[in-house]
Length: 385
Image 1 (cartoon, rainbow, N blue to C red):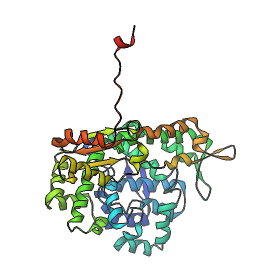
Image 2: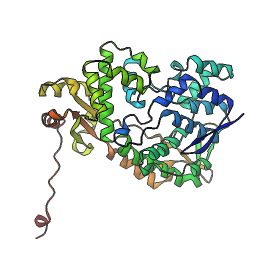
Image 3: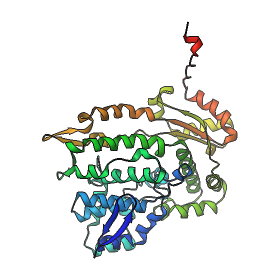
Image 4: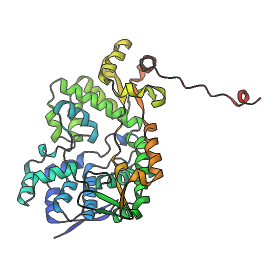
């Protein structure tokens, strides 16, 4: 018997009995309590949507692209391994547990595991599909097609809107990867433009980065003072917030600052043209934080060095079928080639600290990173004879 739920992005989403059983497990319901965008609601008040509805959306899109039940369920479970505040705990989990959220075998336990076994589904195949199936985790996949539009909707930022239905209609699966038909080229370009706009505007907004980095610092403080990092695999946002509020020291201070939105401030915030990018990408941020803090004379926890990651944009490598010939998206579209070149220009180096330390940290950080001064712009009187 099929059930339907109403989704603000995709309309009616149909669920069969197996999907309903999976959704109703405590392990999947935990995703209702993990925000999709971490601390983005500090900037965009509507950004309170969760991994739960995103997972349903990804499952829905996957079901339109394949009849393979296990691929569809992999799409549904692709975020089951997320720790509290989504990507906010990711670096810490990787550091202390060697864990990434795609390592779902560690969290497919209890009732969820029982349902999958009872339904005759392969846990190992589902886990493999989550990591490597092109519909779930590929160049142009169901995950990207959902989160850009969903995040745009809930933040109120219109940049993430593109024609999902057109793109789905103009994609086919050749058994190994998703191929974009020539008629879907403009929709694919629109997706890449949306991604390009959403990252600096939402995902890497400086307030989101500051709150996330403060939370990471607090989490590391807890672990270094006896908290078992393995607990993160089964906690939600509310669990970790409650734990921090009832803790002491730096972790308690940080969560109180986040609660009241009294965040660290930017002591330094510059793009690639003002620093030596190659050197900075190879530096040890924790060591630099300690050196700057020592020079200022404050605790190292009050200095955050945020080097934005430069990741390969897999979407550029998507294939387009033009008259039977498969061509890379960036080669098929001059617009995409331009986007690829422009991608690096959104990169930022940030140094954050408490308001009362900004002036001192700013000077020392600028000297440390040998920040190039911006030439003073001439006035009209100086330019004209």
